Length: 238
Image (cartoon, rainbow, N blue to C red; front, side, top):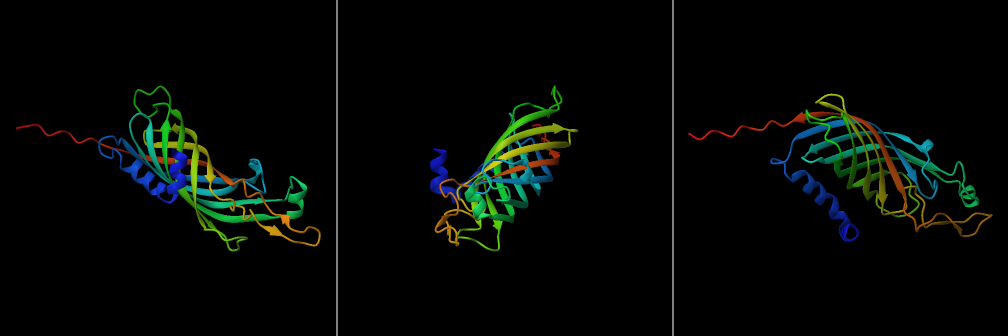
């Protein structure tokens, strides 16, 4: 059902998700709000790098807004921006050695996410100061690229999913570490896909694999400040 939803209405799915998770229970169920930010990094897998390589990390920045609800649920509006890169510098096969391609571009993303925290670490009766959590959502990425090897939109839909751990420094401050993957629906994050090049040694050389879309990954270490809501007392009847 979710696959059908994103396939048929992928341009409408993100606004719908943001409206749904941020409007649900704003008064009745909202407990607190968080604003935060910190350092982050992007990584990439695709035609140039087939498996996750920690040495391919780049530096990015991250800002977010969170509305916390009851029972461990929260809604998050996330913004991140930074460099992303990949290359055939260490070719994994003869095709990559001949291709000798590379990219290094600036990426901006915005997403709405639903988070679930497994432990109640915020209450006065909590036995621990931390909790692991899971996250899933929908969003868009913007690629700032000067030269393209094909015709495609600079704005693309992505599905973020992953998790992390939160640690409470105090009732107001929380430190958060997160790792999540970004599912893409196109194959040109690395500017390589169904394209052919011709040189003196190779005729109609296959440039990339268009049957396998690219992925990228987000890692973040952030600090957030919590604004606690105060319930208004019910007026007494005269």
